[in-house]
Length: 334
Ligand code: PSU
Ligand code: MN
Image (cartoon, rainbow, N blue to C red; front, top):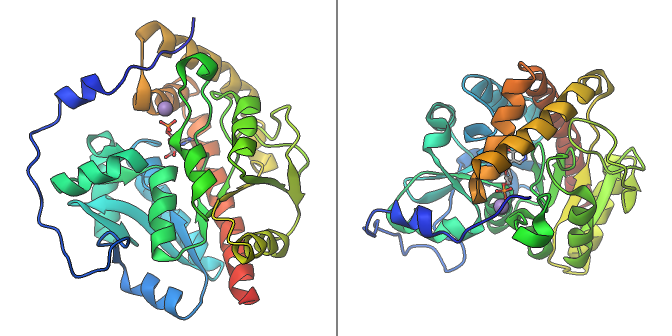
């Protein structure tokens, strides 16, 4: 009666034998041979605001060409608010922090042909010299290694419905528990079990705040039925929480959940119906593991005739504006 997850037996069968890619030994352990774009490195060195962006949302979260347009627009919004964007992905086995326009384009064109990479997949794509689109968990980890404290995306993963039995709980949640990066998002989609997602985040010690709202937002709608554990109303307040967490060396992350803009929330009801149908289809077809989220996102887009995609794009750009302001407020505190 719910989605089931198998171990990685199936995906292991599709792996090529391990052919090790050459690794650079020039950098100290822990920096993972990161390639940080010159512009990003300069901003970080000067203490100017930087905003990390993920790449699974580009490869698996939206179709081409809207994914490319959105990725470019989100970077432009970050810049327009005075911060430097750093889109994160693994290219040829090397984690990149900040992509060139042509790297961004190839990733967007490749779409789902690129491997979706969460924390657990990083050693594999690095060792095999593969490309990988990073999820929230892997993007947070790499952002933290590069020294970036603020990360913008659309929605985080969570506890899937039925997760109390399947244990399908996104690695995003445990990453939030262990990596000091603030994730600015529109909450979690109602394809997930939002109450359990919030419970799990509490267990992981993650500070969760809604931005300008009392309720935790559910991506396409401003309402989840769950009260947010905290509320902040300004970028300065959000930055003060990040600074406090750093001061105490808490080591964990933070969720700043920004409700979808009012103009887009109207599409919410139709999208909610599509979500129930997509969930049923996933169950009937036996979709499993890391394919669950991409499957649901694509079906929702198909079922709503593009309205959900339009709302998705609008909310990511809105999050980018908020995230850039938070990064600027944080830089001003230093
Ligand atoms: N939710 C969205 N859009 C997305 C994702 C989640 O609304 O693109 C992506 C993010 O990269 C997130 C990942 O980190 O899916 C979570 O996947 P999983 O549920 O397999 O952990
Ligand atoms: Mn999962």
